[in-house]
Image 1 (cartoon, rainbow, N blue to C red):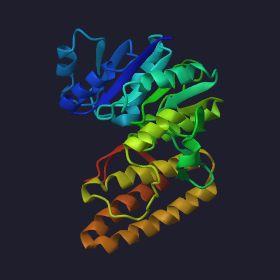
Image 2 (cartoon, helix red, strand yellow):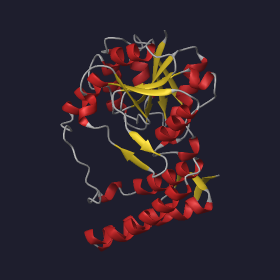
Image 3 (cartoon, rainbow, N blue to C red):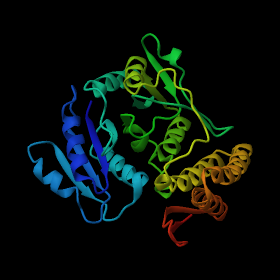
Amino acid sequence: MRFAVFVMTYHRPEILGKTIVSLLGQTIQPEKILIIDNDPSFSAKAVAEKLTTFPIAYHATGDNIGPAGAAAVGLKILSEEGYDWIGWMDDDDPPVFSDSFEKLLTLAQQHDNCGCVGAVGHYFNVKTGLINRVADHELEGEGSIAVDNIAGGMCKIVSAKVFRKHHILPNEKLFYGFEELEFDLRVKDAGYSLLTDKELYKRNRLNANRLGYRLKRGLKKQESSLWREYYSTRNMLYILRQHHSGKAVTTLFVRSLLKSLAGFRFGFQYGITNARFILKALFHFLKGTTGSINLKQTKTSTKA
């Protein structure tokens, strides 16, 4: 079994360096760590040049092609180089525990039809468009849990078979937001399972102090991060339409309209900003616009 990792990064060389050191501290080290640099100024190149004694490779995309584009590049390169399992990593999300790779790769090899493993996963209902949490009691005991989605930052490791046999790669048109979910659903549609290890999952939940956690919807978000509402709304609608979930598309569309109004309870400026991103997402979904969007202006860089 050959195992490699790609790490996506954008203008965070110090954080990237620490994450790479963490990856090399795993009880099972990757044969290769491929840095996918989305920074047009090549800020990660210096990190690769400093770590010459380690199995580091560097690939510059030349532009910010987003997590979706960077993940597609990383999976394609490492699959074509003959690696069997490929870690999908962000520059600021190293594995929490030093035995994470070991636990997950052991799990992966126990199941012939496994397409992806991860430390944490979720269920997804295509008919409703809702992501559902794995219940605490499901983590008791030993063994694995089959999930529908293993998000970024969750120690995601993908079988190269999904690309070599089925040519499944992340959809670059999504740019940012739910690109892992869209990829995972296609992996499942191809007949593969997505698995998490119960014991490792529970350790991660304990470490994050999320045992007994109850999701609270409608909370105020950081105003500086409201731009994410654009991508999450637009891309989720795209995913649901892709899976012919017409009722879920309609429900999410109406829910998003109500959400654009509900933001005003946190103040006028907050409401205006929130509504602008959500309404633009709805308009672009109807128009068929995808890719990276300059959210300060109206022009787009990619169109479906």
